[in-house]
Length: 398
Image 1 (spheres, rainbow, N blue to C red):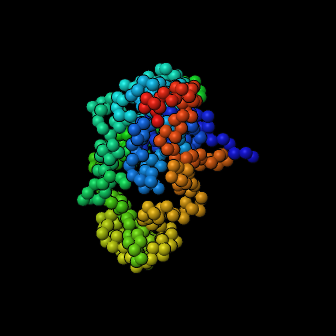
Image 2: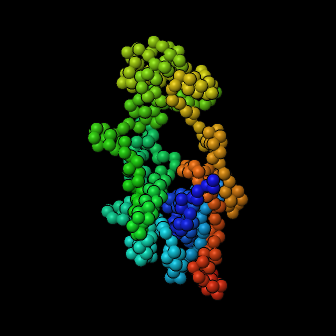
Image 3: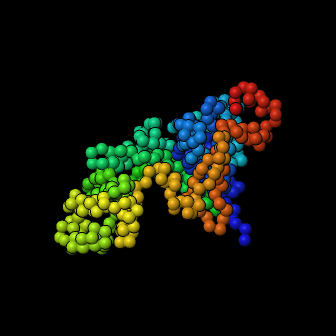
């Protein structure tokens, strides 16, 4: 039996995008089979290309978010460059943009304008704070939105809040843009009409703040910052091991505590000791609880500590660094790694989390060079050699 085609084969996406949020959204579409045409500036392209050179000379953010796309480099301030985008959009199913507030509207590339001209088009606007309200014009970088959304206030230690180590606001907005585009395509399949999709980074992260937000609004007290510990569960923290490793364990109920006390700490009487028998008492006596667990794990090698915890049925994990994640045995055993092409040669890349058993594997396309597909795309919209040469001569395309 032949595998089913990827679900977005035949779907064309045009994206005027930069940084992370929109490129991450459109990369998901590309992985699922869509043709994604990435419109970039002629003077350096997507500015994420210049963030670093860690990926064999390419920027790590750009490699992560832009595989499987076709790059066309245009001057959108020139009417002839803008005309090229309009021609591309005329044949597209989805348009995505995350330009600064108001920029897309000035170019006539906002969702409302495009959907009025092309009723079947799904047009996705990604912004920092939304199209209206007092923050609409405010610059919205990932860390700033994390702060405005309250995420930083619940992340870190009691002494100091910290931002997340990954661009959470960008990723959240990108995933809602991705799912929003899919939902609008499904609706188009039943109604024949596309329509605008709006996503803001602030809305996305505040949605993800559901637990602390509802805890605070309805309970009156914000959750405490506890590092790797848990504000209302004990033991639930990271503990050093004898060989320099670190193991995190999470006791979810009193039955697990009794198993931990008997089989790992090897002091079964702690399971019924009034100071430790219930989670409420263990939280009150958190320092003593952690000291008991830490003393035992601190005498064990990491492998032995994990083995004992797993045999006792206590949830646990190793605290891995990034290099260790790249070598994770679970990812290797499930064959989650592939290679993708790029201007600097093959690069290792992880399969996307969405797996479609019985279907084709995700399309892990190449990372494009700036303007790599400009000429081919200009020809695809009907331009002849003379017109293309004139656009190059006048600096409208590169």
